[in-house]
Image (cartoon, rainbow over all chains, first blue to last red; front, side):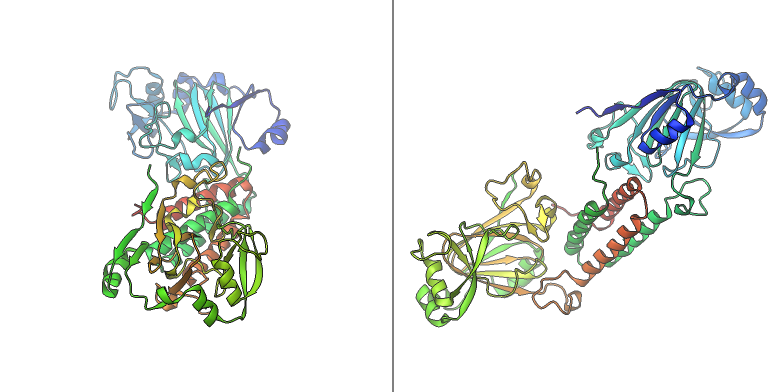
Length: 268
Length: 268
């Protein structure tokens, strides 16, 4: 079974075309030829070092390109912004923290947002490989919280993650100037193939009353979802009154009921 | 993988041995050599016709031995009790409703009880083949309500029921005088191989406050289970406020939560 799905690339899509025909599909798409202004040519290493100044920034430093946000195979270090830019653009480092080919990552705002908001990943400069997974395939992704434990996508440990092969991989390479639409709830795994700058623009897909009012960064589940999970916990607490064999039996019936009532049937 | 498990046969078990060593295992077992009094020899066709009288009884009549309580491949007919006994004991019928080898079944009390109470199936006369399934295997049984849709156990339609082969079959043949212990929640499928009389004795396994007070026949779920399912329905109603893709996503997270918190881990 072929589980690799190329992400659609569309050239010169207008705002109206995006909003009317593409956005409602709720699927990732790479938009090419979008007018991003002068940043794609202007944001060179020299320019960024110069205008960014020498304010200290906290960066992720890792020996490998694939950073693992579950086991944390990276260390946090601090560098002046201009120094960081220069180092990140080097292939080999004469001064380094871990190794001469260590990788750097600067995340500019808060924690990694959850998948609850829609997102444009704007590849201003550099090149990234992105693999996306549909929320429908969450069951095959071995999630720890909202992140997949499977990091080595090209050579996953199938004895540890036997169902992972069932997840469909939506793949694309982002070149400078490309904009990737990542719908809310989609999982993504990014590897930078060279130094580059990406800008994420998040926005709320649902009407604003669906979101927690204290949720500045879109990190939280929609309020209806958090409430449903709280209510479920009460149901599970009630089941705890029963001996194990009955609890297990009725828990399985509850699962069937959820599948029957709330799972989407138009699974493609 | 061998999915057939013979049901343990135990000879001459005392009441105390049963209660202390066998009952707590919560597994089906055939008890042989239990003193059932004189019924095993006394309850002949002639005796039953004579003492049972001619009061009319409503019986199930089917062309095949395997009655299907989902699609209802039987009809209800009425006969005087003594006539019914004589007919049921015949191999071929000179007078019949459907066919000369039609099968009869008289269920003496209310509706088929659910699997919530413990049960002794006492085979007074005749011979039955019984296949039992653990509540843990409910997911492979294609339940419609509390009954499995898979009836032809010896030749199941695997294109329709592809997971059925995963269910472990606990099998036994009951001879006259045998007593089968069927723990609460276990599914059973019975074929009578000859005319016979079986007596079921149900009793509550859990303490009486666990059961619905209006539940005379043990047909209902324990109150904690019904409550849990009602609460779950409220959670699902809350999820309905979200668009389909979010509902599906959070429904799947709810399933993972139930599996994590309420499924039994000592699955053997």
